Length: 268
Length: 261
Image 1 (tube, each protein chain N blue to C red):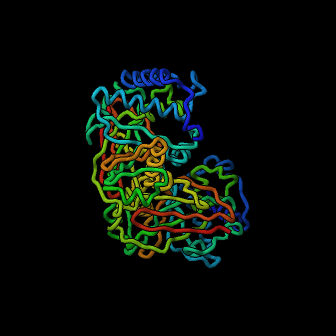
Image 2: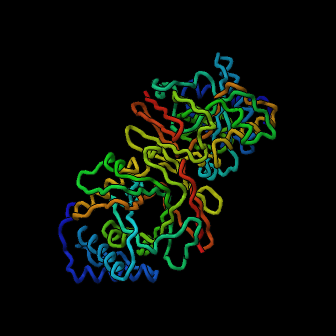
Image 3: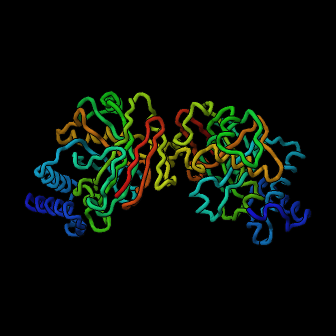
């Protein structure tokens, strides 16, 4: 991310693109990827658009309840032709209770991913954060399912476009049981995703950058590039352990985690 | 298929095994070959190995993933026999370039039984009660059939495409592991290449052993105390060659590694 430090878009263009992408999210319609119209835009521009969307939500009274990492599996990065993961924020209304219902009509073409979430008890500020720092700063780990919903047509995007689109964040469910990281073997921790009672995906923690905690370290280091930190008490989803699976209205899902219980929900 | 044909095909596959040669798919030569014919062919192949001094030490279950079953258009697993000559220990070099033709590695959970199991009517609870321990395992499958162009009848006749296997050096009581959610991480030459969990094999590796006990029960054959049962791959098959190094780690169980030469 060599051009992370400079802008090619004007502040007015950044605000305009933030409105454009946030409207697509709020009203659930597809748009073409923004790099088609702004091929010169930089990673700094992309993150500035995301942070502008975040600012708009907070100004409207929404609370930011956590962070997420995206494109954290080597397979997914290769599939999307990108070389780096990305992050996004979680707003209060993204949260769906365990066992709850997700309204399919509020989304465009949702997919679900089995993830883990880390909750911190100490701040993490990059650069230079490593797995050891993350484990020391982690209060507990709990299971999470993310509903991703790219605002881009057919889920097709490049890294800059997806960063501007808040890394496809839309909904998440957390629950199951929590455990301190010292009690878990995070690399081999297994997950089993079932949709309508059928096993559709299995995986283990190492699918995320080799070790789930390395995803949190990367978030701290990426935020550090903007002078931001991860405060104590932050809920962080680490990115998909399994492939993302498309879901339809009426589908119910349940994800079982080794040593961490089960999360379930339904699309209505 | 008559007895003579079955014997000839079993002998042909044994020759292919010994000389590391590939043969044309049986299904391309005998259109009406049944799965039952194939199991009889595999028994002739096994008999040749026993005649040469090998000893049966267990069984393997194959075709346990939905993806593989869909690819071969079948709705059931298959099984083959394990002999002492196929078994390798943790840390030992596995001579695939001398013994195998087109090897692929898969990560599995091996069951070691402490009681006999005779189907029909065997349940998951019976399997758990009869299991002494579970052990991480690499199975290196191989096919004597041209370029892995197999249908189910081909692989069944070819001893379920069995090659060689290595068991890890940690054995765990099955009561201590959730065999359905336990995660698997496979690394090749230092990189994570795949992950999975127990449920990838018929919902649970236990279900695979249940299937085998009941399938063999149809022929009056028990799974025996002390036998090693390889329960089926939890991850996609990975082609391997001499010089590769692989390891598999299973949550709550342990790991196994193998160096291919």
